[in-house]
Image (cartoon, rainbow, N blue to C red):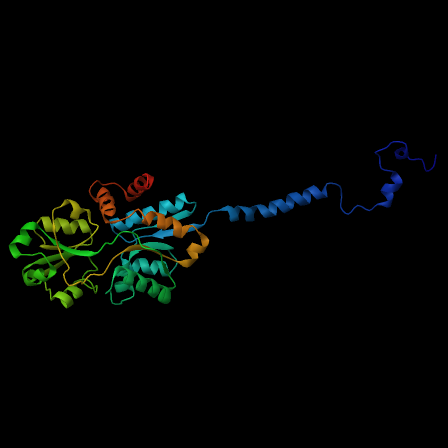
Length: 320
């Protein structure tokens, strides 16, 4: 029965002769193995592509900065980013250097500080003018981006106790110039050298204090004022003590101090890694103004709550 093939009588079977006439391109089962191998090679790349980008959020070393840094960090996390916190870095120039070195991707800064301290430029002008100049200056000098400002304008202020104001007839900084040789000023570490600090007071008002005392912590300055260790305190517009303490804020009648609008300063590559970044921070900034910031500062300094807790509660509140 030479040449007999069962397949010829049973439909569905392949003839032996036909089998001998074909050359299979790979062994049986190789297709499945190759597909599995290709999938295994692709998986690490797919996993990396799906990982959220890392953003490093920084801040300077006082209450308001810690709270706003947390607000930014938590909002970005809620939007899908992974956040590394580099908060409480130090003063302005330390935070700026960290941003330039790529140790952080963003931090909150004040327009007047960026223009006067970092760019060392004149701080005269309206809020819009100061913002435009600092934005253009950072782009030109550092390749950094200022995003749109919040509603916070945390300008400088000098304040005294009501009894001091009555005793020396103080209502303005011009009034203070006459009494300053008899008074002690308590201020922050940067105030002595800033163009809008002591040098500015001398230049614009001719103010020379009897004594200058430095207090890094804002709360210590207010304590010094209450306990008679200082007569005048350098404060800021968003200090919660201004709203609750009954102090007299001396009016800047000659316009020494520029606007200090709070805004995020960002490395452009961070916005490329996480495109929603600008919109996320804008949504946070839209909810911030001086009275809101005074209250958030108070919850940390007076109530003793952690900045992380204060930020989480605020972000959880319904938007007005």
